[in-house]
Image 1 (cartoon, rainbow, N blue to C red):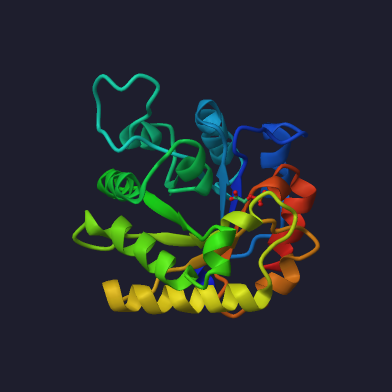
Image 2: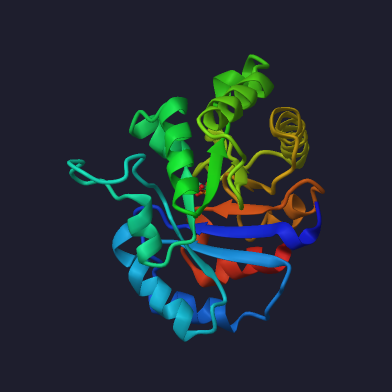
Length: 248
Ligand code: PGA
């Protein structure tokens, strides 16, 4: 896969950057442009519209993404947000199946698959998160778990969604300060690429996520099969996120 596919995602979760959204967006817009990296900023829902306006005001240097979506299109789903609504406020990508959604909100592979289909039907680009818990890794089941997550997610759709990105995020590395090693990432990414080739006959960009920081980004970016990063904690300050950008 060519370097042009590299993607760097800031997942703010239920936080905002300490410097404020506007200052963060301004900082990102001031970075030296690199055609080879797609930048995606993913705020909580209420800030999508504001971020889209900032993006337009500062040269469209980044995309705006959403952290979650409903699998439904409309109706009596109190508290839910449909994909077409995300598109209406300028989102172009949606994170689906993040481990916090899977574990804290009981989202199973089937629901993740339905959400993937909804994102695709709305013409948005999904970022599908997959990854193993520590016990799965220890029992040597990582590859079969990744296969199961990919197969179930893709079951409900006829074709691979255009613009699909996969984020390999080992659950035990998320927010813990200890990322997977370069060797583990290389192995998992090769497995994911092989599974996708077999299941869908194609390649898509594969990002790594889980305690990516300004300190380890350069080493992790040197893994040949890493097409970008999904960053949580270190995306809450433009200084650390900028270091990761430059490391890619
Ligand atoms: P982290 O989060 O970078 O804070 O580990 C990554 C993620 O949850 O996507």
